[in-house]
Length: 500
Image 1 (tube, one colour):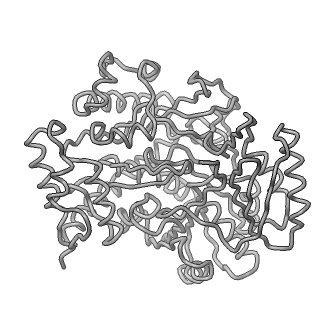
Image 2: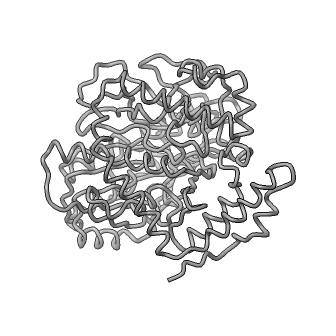
Image 3: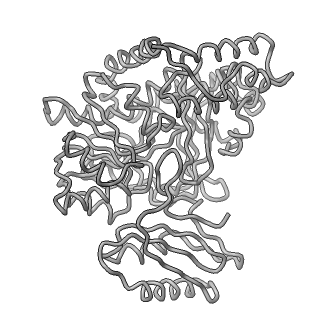
């Protein structure tokens, strides 16, 4: 059977994207060859995928061991990877070459990164063609590839890369290319904790892994399981897109009977309520949640319903799994070997232990095709100062509950943190879920409810809170909805939506 890729991915379109002066003529020819490689047989795609599966199966046990490596050993591996990344970026990325001109990659340690300017998602999307180190690639080629993947299913770009897209919690679309080794490392780090837990619990029998997440293979929550399905450690994988109705998801899960369940927190909350009502009848021994903040009240509801501790993942499509929680313990452990993490305040200064950071700078050391060096994530991360109670040795951060982009800034200069709304809405027992949109003088709030809620009292309470914060004559409208508008492609819920 031939996999024919439809849509805008054509040789003329790629040649037009390679403007004179941006690529050597040899690279223009390589790009055309890359386009030609996109029309492949399903069998050849499977050959490439099996290379990933075999490497994953061979390396997973060793990856699981890294969870308990001494911190110094993890950092030594990270720093070796950092220097290799800097060498590749300086040699093959025109954009990074300018930024790294005073950097000696072979002598660089994480503290030396402070000499390098930060980079934002806007920088990445503006300069994508000059950041990527595989000079065959362009943003247009990547976007066209994503279009064919969305229509036809998973494929490797140029026979070796995976490309994913994410709207991100900030709402700004990002396109990220992963090389073969980086994508393998993404999966290994994603799955090594489950392997470690199964090994220490002496679990046997077939693993059945259910994913309630993105629908199409352009987001990591949809494509990772597909790439590595068939590995003996992962068992059987099945995806249940969040675009399905809740009743369809529940029926599918009841029929599949997963031993492992991953879902966005907003979906996991709904599934917990279905379990309490007796409609969802599954008993997974591991629950994973990520891609959205896991609120404390949601965690309690889910753990009470399933009788299993939720493993919270802090991940990003451009970095991989940055941190994850140990079952039953507060906070999350950093995956210290995959990235250099720098918590900073709004002015770009380092933040001390125990203090919330306005942003987290990450340098992804496992993916060299699209180097992200001091890349800004606007998540409010707090590095914990308390002693580590767990066997995993990565440093610990508090659960990530929000991001700088979620802050509401009003024309009068009043700043309102998302917690102001969370603290009021989260106390109302009848409120299942909510989405808050900023208005010029207040907020418009959509809620999903399980029992009747006095919306007028709730509105008055929030008006009083906003008034105390200095917002003059605030307006708060609250309405009950059947569902929310989720982000296209990923199905994630953006809970707080500032103006603009």
